[in-house]
Image (cartoon, rainbow, N blue to C red):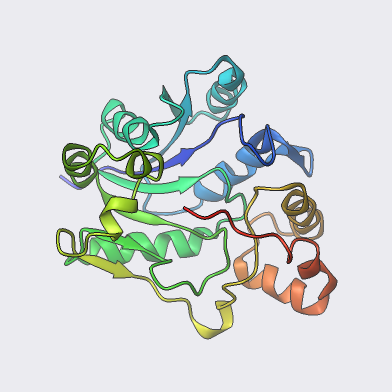
Length: 245
C-alpha cells in the first residue's frame, strides 16, 4: 500500500507581528483559503490538514477548514511539534508535507518536486531551504510521521518543539537530509513572499490582485516575472528583517 502523504498547514490567529494574518483577505478570500487552493493542485497529496490551536480565537480557522472540506486538528499553541505530530496521527498520515500559513503563494510545482525527491528514497528529510535559494515563502519540508515521533522522543527543548523540523536538520548525524535546489530562474533568496508583517500583507495582496483573476494557478515564475517588470513591488517589504529562530 502506498504511504498516505498529507500536507499540514500550521495556522493560528495570534501572530505577534500581524494578528489574524491567516484570515486576512486578498481578492475576496482569506489567505489561508488561497493557500489551500494552491496545495489542492499538488498531484501527490492525499489530503490537507490545518493544524491550529485550542484557543477560542482559532475557532474561525476550524470553521474555514470545514467549509473548504479539508482536515483540521487543534493542539498546543506553543508546542507546535506535538501539535503537528498529533494532527498526523489523528488523520492517519504516513508522510508529512510540512507547511505554514505564512506561505499563501507557495508554488504547487515546488511542493510536488520536494515530494518526488522524498519518494525517490535515500532521505529521511527533504526540504528546499537547507541552502537558501528559493524566495522566502516557498518553504516545504517532507518527512515521515515516524521520524517526527522519533524527534519527539529525543528532545524536550522548547525551541525544538516550537520549530517543528529544527531538530531534524540540525542533526544530520541522525537523519539523512536532502535539499531541493532552486533552478537559476527561480533563485531569489532575499525576496519576501511570506506573510508576517503589514508590509508583507500589502505585497501579497497586490500579487494576488495582479495575477489571480486571470490565472488562479499562477506560479513562482509568474511572480518573479511581475516583480522584474515592476521593481517597486520588491521595495514594499524589502526592508523587513526575518525573525531569527
